[in-house]
Every structure is written in structure tokens, then in C-alpha cells.
Image (cartoon, rainbow, N blue to C red; front, top):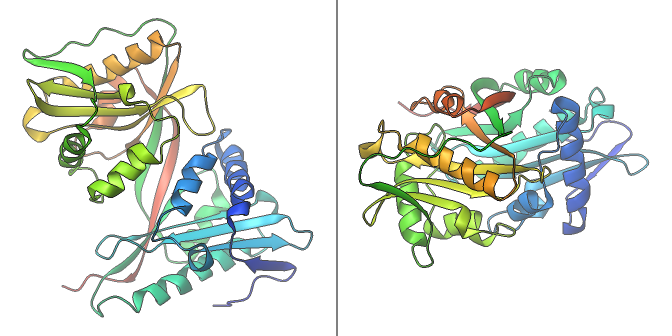
Length: 326
């Protein structure tokens, strides 16, 4: 595996000053594949601010001779196995056949091999590559050539409202309200419990959850964190934000879940209708989310019942460098 960049290209690690150029490259790829911007400065910048993430060792930029950013890759080494290492690679469409993507996937392998020296000898090592769109055939082909296999498909779904949505129908004893000051830890605990059945869900510490869902969220609005409650007990949640990075006209459901003992009572559908209604009341007509196409709880069918439609598939590829010991 050649550790050198392809002829005519140079490499270096990113600086914080490169953030905007990197996000522009990522959105160029997603626009080419799906017609949409998907990433914002906040999203990637939050990742770069992680204390466990080191720009000098965990990310790589590739430049064409005229200093055109041609590719970018990064790895997150914080979560020890059995959780997979999260990796991603991005290639400017103009350089898709110039060896840039192959170099970046090779760099990822070498970085993970370095990280693996700090792990027990029998620890499994898996790499989960960030979603790629099926339209990006060059990316799919590269991943498969480097030993990645398709393990999951996630769909983006969206509702575009031309009239107020139905009012939520709640079971007896259940009501919906926004998160209150001082109950962040309770929301965290109940959301972690509700998400435990989601494929690929990694348990977060409270500090990490608070960082992702509150502290590092630009224009955080607690009134958009909706809770289904029975008395004082949180039984379900829908954590939303006013706009999707790169798509200010679209509200987003970051996470929706109902604890096991309260499922199949219509609470999740009521949460959806409630949040749709609140977005509509505030003037937002489109709301989107991502869903596992093979969800254990049948979430995709729930979202269709609520009036959402699928408009984009994302493919999750995984590579095993060292299998789990039996």
C-alpha cells in the first residue's frame, strides 16, 4: 500500500483555518450526489473540537498542484472496541479517478493500525465509513476494493407541510411538554434507554451527550426538545433543532425514541405530530430526519404513517481489520 500521494498531489494535516474549505468540499460531494448541502461549519467544527481528536494525527488533506483541495479524510479513535472506529473520506468529483480516494483509504488503514497498537491483542477492529450515497459509484467501488462491505442503509425522510398537521392523539395519562431547565441529566438517561435498540448506537457519557446535544449546538433551543411524560416520568422524547446544517429551510429531528415499556401505544406518532405542529406554527414547513432502513422498531413505517417520505438513501460500509475472537 503506497504511503505517498498520487503524482501531482501533496498532503498535509488540516488546520482550524481549513474548516470552511473542508466543509465546502464535503457539500460539493453531497450536492453532486444528491443535489443538497448536508454539512455545516458547526457540524464539522464540533467534531474537530473533540478533546480526543487531534488534527495533526487524525485527519489528512490532499491538494492538487494549484492548491485546489482534492480530498479529505479523518478518523475518530476515541471509542475503544468493540465499538467500530468512525472514519470518512471525501474526494472532489474532478479528481475521482486520480488516485486521491485510494490514497486516503490507505492513510485511514495506516492510522487505525497505529491506534490498534494501544489495544489488547485480541480486541476486534472494525471501521465504519460515514454514509456514502449510492449515486457515488466511484466511492462505492473504492470502498469495496479496500475490503469494506455494505452493512446498513439509512434513509433521509422529510415532510413538506402545506397545511397544519393532525393534532397529536395521546394515550390516557400521557402529555407532551418541552424540556425544562435542570432536567438535562434525566433526559439523557431516558434517551439513552430508549435508543438502546438502535443499530450502531454507542453509549454516550452524560458529558459527551450534553456536549453534542446542548453545548455545541448552535442556537440551541430547549423548547424544541419535546418530552412525552406520564406524571413526572419521561417515557419518550423528540430532540429537534430549528434548521438542518446547510438547509436552513428544513427543521430536523435529531433523535426520537420511546422507552420499551411504553411502546406501541401511539406515543411516537403523537410526538411527531406535536413537533410537526410546533414547526408549522413557527413558520417552518419542512422537517426531516434519518432512519435505519432495517429498524428493529419499524421506525420507517411510523414516519410514513406520519406523512414523511423517503428522498435519499445513505449506505453504511464496514471493514474488519481484526475480527472478534470467539
